[in-house]
Image (cartoon, helix red, strand yellow):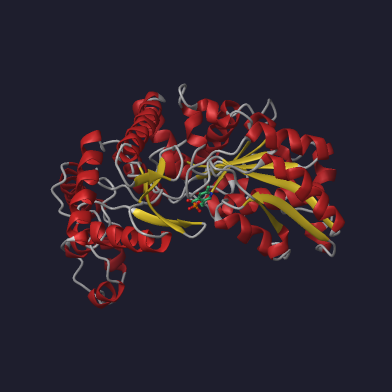
Length: 474
Ligand SMILES: Cc1ncc(COP(=O)(O)O)c(C=O)c1O
Protein backbone atom coordinates (compact mmCIF):
# COMPACT_ATOMS: atom_id res chain seq x y z
CA UNK A 1 0.00 0.00 0.00
CA UNK A 2 2.80 2.33 1.01
CA UNK A 3 4.45 1.72 -2.35
CA UNK A 4 1.24 2.58 -4.16
CA UNK A 5 1.18 6.01 -2.52
CA UNK A 6 4.87 6.55 -3.05
CA UNK A 7 4.23 5.90 -6.71
CA UNK A 8 1.08 8.07 -6.76
CA UNK A 9 2.94 11.07 -5.31
CA UNK A 10 6.21 10.48 -7.11
CA UNK A 11 7.33 13.78 -8.56
CA UNK A 12 9.02 12.24 -11.57
CA UNK A 13 5.94 10.21 -12.49
CA UNK A 14 3.94 13.43 -12.17
CA UNK A 15 6.41 15.25 -14.38
CA UNK A 16 6.23 12.55 -17.06
CA UNK A 17 2.43 12.32 -17.06
CA UNK A 18 2.17 16.11 -16.91
CA UNK A 19 4.40 16.54 -19.95
CA UNK A 20 2.48 13.91 -21.89
CA UNK A 21 -0.81 15.49 -20.97
CA UNK A 22 0.35 18.99 -21.90
CA UNK A 23 1.57 17.59 -25.23
CA UNK A 24 -1.86 16.12 -25.82
CA UNK A 25 -3.56 19.39 -24.92
CA UNK A 26 -1.16 21.35 -27.12
CA UNK A 27 -2.09 19.11 -30.05
CA UNK A 28 -5.77 19.62 -29.22
CA UNK A 29 -5.23 23.38 -29.11
CA UNK A 30 -3.48 23.30 -32.46
CA UNK A 31 -6.29 21.26 -34.04
CA UNK A 32 -8.93 23.54 -32.51
CA UNK A 33 -7.41 26.87 -33.42
CA UNK A 34 -6.46 25.77 -36.95
CA UNK A 35 -9.98 24.38 -37.47
CA UNK A 36 -8.65 20.90 -38.16
CA UNK A 37 -11.46 19.40 -36.13
CA UNK A 38 -14.41 18.82 -38.44
CA UNK A 39 -16.97 19.77 -35.79
CA UNK A 40 -17.11 21.90 -32.66
CA UNK A 41 -19.80 19.71 -31.12
CA UNK A 42 -18.86 16.04 -31.45
CA UNK A 43 -22.19 14.50 -30.55
CA UNK A 44 -25.84 15.45 -30.44
CA UNK A 45 -27.12 12.09 -29.24
CA UNK A 46 -27.15 11.84 -25.42
CA UNK A 47 -27.88 8.08 -25.34
CA UNK A 48 -25.05 7.27 -27.75
CA UNK A 49 -22.74 9.25 -25.49
CA UNK A 50 -23.95 7.41 -22.40
CA UNK A 51 -23.30 4.10 -24.12
CA UNK A 52 -19.66 5.05 -24.70
CA UNK A 53 -18.76 5.33 -21.04
CA UNK A 54 -18.14 2.60 -18.49
CA UNK A 55 -16.74 3.17 -15.04
CA UNK A 56 -13.97 0.63 -15.07
CA UNK A 57 -10.41 0.35 -13.89
CA UNK A 58 -7.66 0.90 -16.44
CA UNK A 59 -3.93 0.53 -16.30
CA UNK A 60 -3.49 4.32 -15.97
CA UNK A 61 -0.27 4.30 -17.90
CA UNK A 62 -1.40 5.74 -21.21
CA UNK A 63 -3.51 8.72 -22.19
CA UNK A 64 -6.35 6.79 -23.80
CA UNK A 65 -8.85 8.06 -21.26
CA UNK A 66 -7.96 11.72 -21.92
CA UNK A 67 -7.95 11.14 -25.69
CA UNK A 68 -11.44 9.68 -25.49
CA UNK A 69 -12.69 12.63 -23.40
CA UNK A 70 -11.18 15.05 -25.91
CA UNK A 71 -12.83 13.29 -28.83
CA UNK A 72 -16.20 13.48 -27.10
CA UNK A 73 -16.02 17.05 -25.82
CA UNK A 74 -17.07 20.41 -27.25
CA UNK A 75 -14.15 22.33 -28.77
CA UNK A 76 -14.39 25.85 -27.37
CA UNK A 77 -11.12 27.08 -28.86
CA UNK A 78 -12.38 26.31 -32.39
CA UNK A 79 -13.13 29.67 -34.08
CA UNK A 80 -16.51 28.33 -35.20
CA UNK A 81 -17.61 27.93 -31.61
CA UNK A 82 -20.39 30.54 -31.43
CA UNK A 83 -22.68 28.99 -28.86
CA UNK A 84 -23.21 29.40 -25.13
CA UNK A 85 -21.58 31.93 -22.84
CA UNK A 86 -18.60 29.91 -21.70
CA UNK A 87 -15.18 31.21 -22.59
CA UNK A 88 -12.52 29.45 -24.66
CA UNK A 89 -10.13 29.36 -21.74
CA UNK A 90 -6.78 31.04 -22.27
CA UNK A 91 -4.03 28.40 -22.09
CA UNK A 92 -2.17 30.38 -19.43
CA UNK A 93 -5.26 30.38 -17.22
CA UNK A 94 -5.72 26.63 -17.77
CA UNK A 95 -2.17 26.10 -16.53
CA UNK A 96 -2.96 28.24 -13.50
CA UNK A 97 -5.96 25.97 -12.92
CA UNK A 98 -3.69 22.93 -12.92
CA UNK A 99 -1.37 24.77 -10.53
CA UNK A 100 -4.21 25.61 -8.16
CA UNK A 101 -5.59 22.06 -8.34
CA UNK A 102 -2.33 20.62 -7.11
CA UNK A 103 -1.92 23.29 -4.42
CA UNK A 104 -5.59 22.85 -3.46
CA UNK A 105 -5.53 25.72 -0.99
CA UNK A 106 -9.05 25.94 0.41
CA UNK A 107 -9.11 29.76 0.19
CA UNK A 108 -12.30 30.30 2.25
CA UNK A 109 -10.12 30.33 5.34
CA UNK A 110 -6.98 32.47 5.42
CA UNK A 111 -4.70 29.75 6.75
CA UNK A 112 -5.86 27.41 4.00
CA UNK A 113 -5.05 29.89 1.23
CA UNK A 114 -3.03 32.92 2.25
CA UNK A 115 -1.90 33.94 -1.25
CA UNK A 116 -5.15 33.18 -3.07
CA UNK A 117 -7.17 35.00 -0.40
CA UNK A 118 -5.06 38.14 -0.62
CA UNK A 119 -5.17 38.14 -4.41
CA UNK A 120 -8.92 37.62 -4.37
CA UNK A 121 -9.43 40.61 -2.11
CA UNK A 122 -7.31 42.85 -4.32
CA UNK A 123 -8.88 41.70 -7.60
CA UNK A 124 -12.41 42.32 -6.31
CA UNK A 125 -11.44 45.71 -4.87
CA UNK A 126 -9.88 46.75 -8.18
CA UNK A 127 -12.88 45.58 -10.20
CA UNK A 128 -15.36 47.33 -7.88
CA UNK A 129 -13.33 50.53 -8.19
CA UNK A 130 -13.45 50.24 -11.97
CA UNK A 131 -17.22 49.88 -11.69
CA UNK A 132 -17.12 53.13 -9.70
CA UNK A 133 -18.79 51.52 -6.72
CA UNK A 134 -17.06 53.87 -4.28
CA UNK A 135 -14.24 53.98 -1.72
CA UNK A 136 -15.69 51.30 0.59
CA UNK A 137 -16.49 48.88 -2.21
CA UNK A 138 -15.09 45.40 -2.67
CA UNK A 139 -16.07 41.78 -2.41
CA UNK A 140 -15.04 38.20 -2.96
CA UNK A 141 -15.04 35.41 -5.52
CA UNK A 142 -17.58 32.62 -5.59
CA UNK A 143 -18.46 29.60 -7.72
CA UNK A 144 -20.50 31.02 -10.58
CA UNK A 145 -23.04 33.67 -11.44
CA UNK A 146 -25.97 31.62 -10.15
CA UNK A 147 -24.52 31.35 -6.66
CA UNK A 148 -23.31 34.95 -6.83
CA UNK A 149 -26.80 36.28 -7.59
CA UNK A 150 -28.28 34.20 -4.77
CA UNK A 151 -25.62 35.51 -2.39
CA UNK A 152 -26.13 39.17 -3.33
CA UNK A 153 -29.92 38.86 -3.08
CA UNK A 154 -29.54 37.24 0.34
CA UNK A 155 -27.42 40.24 1.33
CA UNK A 156 -30.17 42.53 0.06
CA UNK A 157 -32.67 40.62 2.18
CA UNK A 158 -30.41 40.92 5.24
CA UNK A 159 -30.03 44.66 4.67
CA UNK A 160 -33.73 45.35 4.19
CA UNK A 161 -35.20 42.72 6.54
CA UNK A 162 -32.53 42.41 9.26
CA UNK A 163 -34.18 39.62 11.26
CA UNK A 164 -34.91 37.42 8.21
CA UNK A 165 -31.86 35.19 8.63
CA UNK A 166 -32.79 34.38 12.22
CA UNK A 167 -36.59 34.49 12.23
CA UNK A 168 -37.43 33.87 8.55
CA UNK A 169 -40.03 36.00 6.81
CA UNK A 170 -43.77 35.88 7.33
CA UNK A 171 -44.83 38.92 5.33
CA UNK A 172 -44.84 39.13 1.51
CA UNK A 173 -41.67 40.51 -0.09
CA UNK A 174 -40.45 40.80 -3.67
CA UNK A 175 -37.76 42.07 -6.04
CA UNK A 176 -38.57 43.81 -9.29
CA UNK A 177 -36.76 41.85 -12.02
CA UNK A 178 -36.74 41.94 -15.79
CA UNK A 179 -38.89 39.36 -17.54
CA UNK A 180 -35.65 38.71 -19.47
CA UNK A 181 -33.44 38.22 -16.41
CA UNK A 182 -31.49 34.99 -16.09
CA UNK A 183 -33.54 32.17 -14.57
CA UNK A 184 -31.22 31.99 -11.57
CA UNK A 185 -32.62 35.29 -10.28
CA UNK A 186 -36.10 33.81 -10.11
CA UNK A 187 -34.64 30.69 -8.56
CA UNK A 188 -32.84 32.71 -5.87
CA UNK A 189 -36.08 34.37 -4.81
CA UNK A 190 -37.88 31.04 -4.64
CA UNK A 191 -35.05 29.64 -2.52
CA UNK A 192 -35.80 32.46 -0.06
CA UNK A 193 -39.29 31.00 0.22
CA UNK A 194 -41.11 33.84 -1.50
CA UNK A 195 -42.39 31.67 -4.35
CA UNK A 196 -43.13 32.93 -7.83
CA UNK A 197 -44.64 36.14 -6.41
CA UNK A 198 -41.23 37.08 -4.99
CA UNK A 199 -39.96 38.07 -8.43
CA UNK A 200 -42.26 40.68 -9.96
CA UNK A 201 -41.55 40.60 -13.69
CA UNK A 202 -40.96 43.92 -15.38
CA UNK A 203 -41.94 43.92 -19.09
CA UNK A 204 -39.33 44.87 -21.68
CA UNK A 205 -39.25 47.42 -24.49
CA UNK A 206 -38.41 46.69 -28.14
CA UNK A 207 -34.71 46.47 -27.24
CA UNK A 208 -35.52 43.86 -24.57
CA UNK A 209 -34.50 46.27 -21.80
CA UNK A 210 -36.64 46.67 -18.68
CA UNK A 211 -39.40 49.13 -19.54
CA UNK A 212 -38.68 51.86 -17.01
CA UNK A 213 -42.07 53.48 -17.58
CA UNK A 214 -43.79 50.50 -15.89
CA UNK A 215 -41.85 50.64 -12.61
CA UNK A 216 -44.05 53.13 -10.75
CA UNK A 217 -47.23 51.19 -11.55
CA UNK A 218 -45.69 47.86 -10.58
CA UNK A 219 -44.50 49.37 -7.31
CA UNK A 220 -47.94 50.81 -6.54
CA UNK A 221 -49.66 47.55 -7.47
CA UNK A 222 -47.35 45.55 -5.17
CA UNK A 223 -48.19 47.92 -2.34
CA UNK A 224 -51.89 47.43 -2.98
CA UNK A 225 -51.31 43.65 -2.84
CA UNK A 226 -49.51 44.07 0.47
CA UNK A 227 -46.17 43.03 -1.03
CA UNK A 228 -43.09 44.96 0.11
CA UNK A 229 -40.60 45.45 -2.69
CA UNK A 230 -37.10 45.42 -1.25
CA UNK A 231 -34.97 45.73 -4.36
CA UNK A 232 -34.54 45.87 -8.12
CA UNK A 233 -32.35 43.58 -10.23
CA UNK A 234 -30.90 45.02 -13.44
CA UNK A 235 -29.21 42.94 -16.13
CA UNK A 236 -25.96 43.99 -17.73
CA UNK A 237 -26.78 42.47 -20.09
CA UNK A 238 -29.70 40.00 -20.22
CA UNK A 239 -28.91 36.46 -21.29
CA UNK A 240 -31.12 35.84 -24.31
CA UNK A 241 -30.53 39.01 -26.34
CA UNK A 242 -27.60 40.62 -24.51
CA UNK A 243 -29.56 43.79 -23.74
CA UNK A 244 -28.23 46.18 -21.10
CA UNK A 245 -30.90 47.63 -18.82
CA UNK A 246 -30.86 51.38 -18.19
CA UNK A 247 -28.88 51.08 -14.98
CA UNK A 248 -28.94 54.79 -14.17
CA UNK A 249 -32.72 54.92 -14.38
CA UNK A 250 -33.00 51.81 -12.21
CA UNK A 251 -30.56 53.30 -9.70
CA UNK A 252 -32.57 56.51 -9.53
CA UNK A 253 -35.78 54.55 -8.95
CA UNK A 254 -34.09 52.59 -6.14
CA UNK A 255 -32.88 55.79 -4.50
CA UNK A 256 -36.39 57.25 -4.59
CA UNK A 257 -37.89 54.29 -2.68
CA UNK A 258 -34.82 53.27 -0.68
CA UNK A 259 -34.55 49.91 -2.44
CA UNK A 260 -31.53 47.63 -2.82
CA UNK A 261 -30.11 47.93 -6.33
CA UNK A 262 -28.48 44.76 -7.62
CA UNK A 263 -26.84 44.47 -11.04
CA UNK A 264 -26.42 41.05 -12.61
CA UNK A 265 -23.38 41.77 -14.77
CA UNK A 266 -22.43 38.09 -15.03
CA UNK A 267 -21.94 38.34 -18.76
CA UNK A 268 -21.20 41.97 -19.53
CA UNK A 269 -19.48 43.37 -16.44
CA UNK A 270 -16.25 42.49 -18.21
CA UNK A 271 -16.72 45.42 -20.60
CA UNK A 272 -15.58 47.69 -17.77
CA UNK A 273 -12.09 46.72 -18.98
CA UNK A 274 -12.75 48.32 -22.39
CA UNK A 275 -12.41 52.07 -22.80
CA UNK A 276 -14.64 51.89 -25.85
CA UNK A 277 -17.50 49.98 -24.23
CA UNK A 278 -17.29 50.70 -20.51
CA UNK A 279 -20.12 53.22 -20.93
CA UNK A 280 -22.47 50.20 -21.00
CA UNK A 281 -21.88 49.85 -17.27
CA UNK A 282 -22.66 53.48 -16.43
CA UNK A 283 -24.98 53.18 -13.48
CA UNK A 284 -23.07 50.53 -11.51
CA UNK A 285 -21.87 53.51 -9.45
CA UNK A 286 -25.38 53.55 -7.98
CA UNK A 287 -25.55 49.81 -7.30
CA UNK A 288 -25.49 48.24 -3.85
CA UNK A 289 -24.22 44.99 -5.34
CA UNK A 290 -22.85 43.80 -8.69
CA UNK A 291 -21.86 40.30 -9.76
CA UNK A 292 -19.55 39.51 -12.67
CA UNK A 293 -18.31 36.24 -14.18
CA UNK A 294 -14.64 36.13 -15.06
CA UNK A 295 -15.36 32.81 -16.81
CA UNK A 296 -17.57 34.42 -19.41
CA UNK A 297 -15.97 37.44 -21.09
CA UNK A 298 -12.52 37.42 -19.48
CA UNK A 299 -11.23 34.04 -20.73
CA UNK A 300 -10.86 32.48 -17.27
CA UNK A 301 -11.79 28.81 -16.71
CA UNK A 302 -15.18 28.22 -15.05
CA UNK A 303 -16.26 28.93 -12.39
CA UNK A 304 -14.90 32.31 -11.28
CA UNK A 305 -17.36 35.01 -10.25
CA UNK A 306 -16.95 38.25 -8.30
CA UNK A 307 -19.63 39.48 -5.89
CA UNK A 308 -19.04 43.15 -5.15
CA UNK A 309 -20.76 45.58 -2.79
CA UNK A 310 -20.82 49.36 -2.50
CA UNK A 311 -20.08 48.78 1.19
CA UNK A 312 -18.05 45.57 1.30
CA UNK A 313 -18.77 45.18 5.05
CA UNK A 314 -22.44 44.61 4.34
CA UNK A 315 -21.47 41.13 3.12
CA UNK A 316 -21.05 40.02 6.73
CA UNK A 317 -24.77 40.38 7.27
CA UNK A 318 -25.67 37.79 4.62
CA UNK A 319 -25.16 34.73 6.78
CA UNK A 320 -24.95 36.35 10.22
CA UNK A 321 -27.84 37.84 12.15
CA UNK A 322 -25.52 39.75 14.46
CA UNK A 323 -23.65 41.48 11.72
CA UNK A 324 -25.14 44.93 12.11
CA UNK A 325 -23.77 44.98 15.65
CA UNK A 326 -20.42 43.76 14.46
CA UNK A 327 -20.11 46.37 11.72
CA UNK A 328 -20.27 49.17 14.23
CA UNK A 329 -17.44 47.43 16.08
CA UNK A 330 -15.62 47.34 12.76
CA UNK A 331 -14.52 43.78 13.32
CA UNK A 332 -16.05 42.83 10.09
CA UNK A 333 -13.58 43.77 7.43
CA UNK A 334 -12.08 40.37 7.88
CA UNK A 335 -11.19 39.84 4.23
CA UNK A 336 -8.82 37.01 5.00
CA UNK A 337 -11.59 34.55 5.92
CA UNK A 338 -13.85 34.86 2.92
CA UNK A 339 -15.94 31.81 3.89
CA UNK A 340 -17.71 34.10 6.36
CA UNK A 341 -19.34 35.88 3.45
CA UNK A 342 -19.60 33.14 0.83
CA UNK A 343 -22.00 30.27 0.45
CA UNK A 344 -19.11 27.85 0.02
CA UNK A 345 -16.97 26.60 2.84
CA UNK A 346 -14.03 25.15 0.91
CA UNK A 347 -13.44 27.36 -2.10
CA UNK A 348 -11.24 27.03 -5.20
CA UNK A 349 -8.17 29.21 -5.71
CA UNK A 350 -10.04 31.25 -8.32
CA UNK A 351 -7.94 34.39 -8.04
CA UNK A 352 -4.82 32.57 -9.27
CA UNK A 353 -6.41 32.03 -12.67
CA UNK A 354 -7.33 35.70 -13.05
CA UNK A 355 -3.97 36.99 -11.90
CA UNK A 356 -2.13 34.56 -14.21
CA UNK A 357 -3.69 36.39 -17.17
CA UNK A 358 -2.97 39.87 -15.81
CA UNK A 359 0.64 38.87 -15.02
CA UNK A 360 1.25 37.41 -18.44
CA UNK A 361 -0.51 39.87 -20.73
CA UNK A 362 -1.64 42.89 -18.73
CA UNK A 363 -5.12 44.43 -19.07
CA UNK A 364 -4.49 45.12 -22.74
CA UNK A 365 -5.36 41.53 -23.68
CA UNK A 366 -8.86 41.83 -22.20
CA UNK A 367 -9.42 45.20 -23.79
CA UNK A 368 -8.39 43.98 -27.25
CA UNK A 369 -10.44 40.83 -26.85
CA UNK A 370 -13.62 42.62 -25.71
CA UNK A 371 -13.50 45.15 -28.52
CA UNK A 372 -12.87 42.48 -31.13
CA UNK A 373 -15.83 40.40 -29.94
CA UNK A 374 -18.13 43.41 -29.87
CA UNK A 375 -17.06 44.67 -33.30
CA UNK A 376 -17.45 41.18 -34.75
CA UNK A 377 -20.99 40.94 -33.39
CA UNK A 378 -21.86 44.25 -35.05
CA UNK A 379 -20.43 42.88 -38.30
CA UNK A 380 -22.58 39.75 -37.89
CA UNK A 381 -25.71 41.89 -37.35
CA UNK A 382 -24.93 43.90 -40.49
CA UNK A 383 -24.60 40.71 -42.55
CA UNK A 384 -27.95 39.40 -41.29
CA UNK A 385 -29.87 42.65 -41.62
CA UNK A 386 -28.87 43.25 -45.21
CA UNK A 387 -30.26 39.88 -46.28
CA UNK A 388 -33.78 39.47 -47.55
CA UNK A 389 -36.03 37.48 -45.18
CA UNK A 390 -33.61 37.67 -42.28
CA UNK A 391 -33.65 39.81 -39.13
CA UNK A 392 -31.95 40.25 -35.78
CA UNK A 393 -34.12 40.40 -32.64
CA UNK A 394 -32.59 43.81 -31.90
CA UNK A 395 -29.36 45.62 -32.59
CA UNK A 396 -26.80 43.73 -30.47
CA UNK A 397 -25.60 45.76 -27.50
CA UNK A 398 -23.09 43.12 -26.49
CA UNK A 399 -21.48 40.10 -28.13
CA UNK A 400 -24.75 38.14 -28.05
CA UNK A 401 -26.83 38.12 -31.21
CA UNK A 402 -30.27 36.60 -31.94
CA UNK A 403 -31.23 36.19 -35.59
CA UNK A 404 -33.79 34.33 -37.66
CA UNK A 405 -35.09 33.57 -41.10
CA UNK A 406 -38.44 35.29 -41.59
CA UNK A 407 -39.50 34.04 -45.05
CA UNK A 408 -42.22 31.60 -43.91
CA UNK A 409 -45.99 32.05 -44.09
CA UNK A 410 -46.39 32.37 -40.31
CA UNK A 411 -44.31 32.68 -37.13
CA UNK A 412 -44.90 28.98 -36.51
CA UNK A 413 -43.65 28.06 -40.00
CA UNK A 414 -40.56 30.24 -39.53
CA UNK A 415 -39.94 28.70 -36.11
CA UNK A 416 -39.85 25.25 -37.64
CA UNK A 417 -37.36 26.29 -40.31
CA UNK A 418 -35.12 28.08 -37.82
CA UNK A 419 -35.13 25.06 -35.50
CA UNK A 420 -34.27 22.81 -38.45
CA UNK A 421 -31.45 25.17 -39.44
CA UNK A 422 -29.90 25.10 -35.99
CA UNK A 423 -30.08 21.30 -35.75
CA UNK A 424 -28.64 20.78 -39.23
CA UNK A 425 -25.87 23.32 -38.68
CA UNK A 426 -24.58 21.58 -35.55
CA UNK A 427 -25.14 18.05 -36.88
CA UNK A 428 -23.10 18.69 -39.97
CA UNK A 429 -20.53 20.97 -38.35
CA UNK A 430 -18.21 22.67 -38.04
CA UNK A 431 -20.29 25.49 -36.47
CA UNK A 432 -21.85 25.48 -33.04
CA UNK A 433 -24.72 27.91 -32.46
CA UNK A 434 -27.66 27.77 -30.06
CA UNK A 435 -31.30 28.79 -30.12
CA UNK A 436 -33.75 30.72 -27.96
CA UNK A 437 -37.46 31.44 -27.93
CA UNK A 438 -38.64 34.96 -27.17
CA UNK A 439 -42.36 35.60 -26.81
CA UNK A 440 -43.14 32.59 -29.03
CA UNK A 441 -40.59 33.37 -31.74
CA UNK A 442 -37.62 31.08 -32.31
CA UNK A 443 -34.27 32.77 -32.85
CA UNK A 444 -30.89 31.33 -33.69
CA UNK A 445 -28.46 32.68 -31.14
CA UNK A 446 -24.72 33.15 -31.06
CA UNK A 447 -22.38 34.47 -28.44
CA UNK A 448 -19.10 35.47 -30.07
CA UNK A 449 -16.58 34.56 -27.41
CA UNK A 450 -13.63 33.15 -29.26
CA UNK A 451 -10.91 35.76 -29.94
CA UNK A 452 -9.77 33.73 -32.96
CA UNK A 453 -13.14 34.01 -34.70
CA UNK A 454 -12.91 36.37 -37.68
CA UNK A 455 -15.31 38.00 -40.13
CA UNK A 456 -14.55 35.17 -42.58
CA UNK A 457 -16.03 32.67 -40.09
CA UNK A 458 -19.19 34.78 -39.92
CA UNK A 459 -19.33 34.95 -43.72
CA UNK A 460 -19.00 31.17 -43.90
CA UNK A 461 -21.84 30.69 -41.41
CA UNK A 462 -24.12 33.03 -43.35
CA UNK A 463 -23.30 31.25 -46.62
CA UNK A 464 -23.87 27.87 -44.98
CA UNK A 465 -27.30 28.96 -43.77
CA UNK A 466 -28.18 30.14 -47.30
CA UNK A 467 -27.06 26.81 -48.72
CA UNK A 468 -29.14 24.89 -46.17
CA UNK A 469 -32.20 27.00 -46.84
CA UNK A 470 -31.92 26.26 -50.57
CA UNK A 471 -31.70 22.58 -49.71
CA UNK A 472 -34.72 22.82 -47.39
CA UNK A 473 -36.83 24.55 -49.99
CA UNK A 474 -35.85 22.20 -52.85
C1 LIG B 1 -27.07 37.35 -16.98
C2 LIG B 1 -26.65 36.04 -16.39
N1 LIG B 1 -26.70 35.89 -15.05
C3 LIG B 1 -26.32 34.74 -14.46
C4 LIG B 1 -25.89 33.68 -15.22
C5 LIG B 1 -25.49 32.40 -14.53
O1 LIG B 1 -24.10 32.34 -14.44
P1 LIG B 1 -23.31 30.97 -14.19
O2 LIG B 1 -23.50 30.14 -15.40
O3 LIG B 1 -21.91 31.41 -13.95
O4 LIG B 1 -23.91 30.34 -12.96
C6 LIG B 1 -25.81 33.79 -16.61
C7 LIG B 1 -25.36 32.66 -17.44
O5 LIG B 1 -25.38 32.66 -18.62
C8 LIG B 1 -26.20 35.01 -17.20
O6 LIG B 1 -26.16 35.18 -18.53
